[in-house]
Image (tube, rainbow, N blue to C red; front, side, top):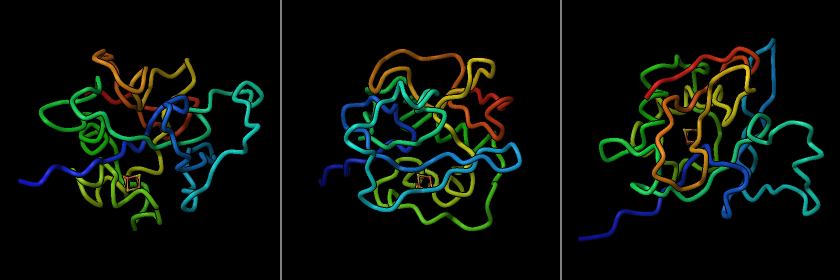
Length: 163
Ligand code: SF4
């Protein structure tokens, strides 16, 4: 029996030791819209998160190897965040965006293109005024936050997604 391939989390904390830049969060008409980066895109070596003036989780999207059942978002044999996004968010694009992660994306592997149609509105973190979050507090961990990932259409007043 073959082993399951290593999949990647598409909304990983920026400080995950294996985080790779996946996208830049733009804001159009008050709504978050992720622009997916090209393959191999990296932050500059001298990138200083403190100088950004905002938590990188608000402004950037990162991928990192999925921790599977070692992640606090794991539910019923799969990614609880991916399921919540599918159940609680509406599509924001008509066609799946050009995204270099697709071959190994956990959300796509479990839920297909319907994840991609919702993915561009997802920010990994939202301002503290909005209780939304789309990633575990740590890259790997058993903790289970009561509020899950939370894609936000408007970072200042994003919706909350419950697992
Ligand atoms: S859900 Fe789709 S668009 Fe989003 S990171 Fe995964 S493959 Fe890319």
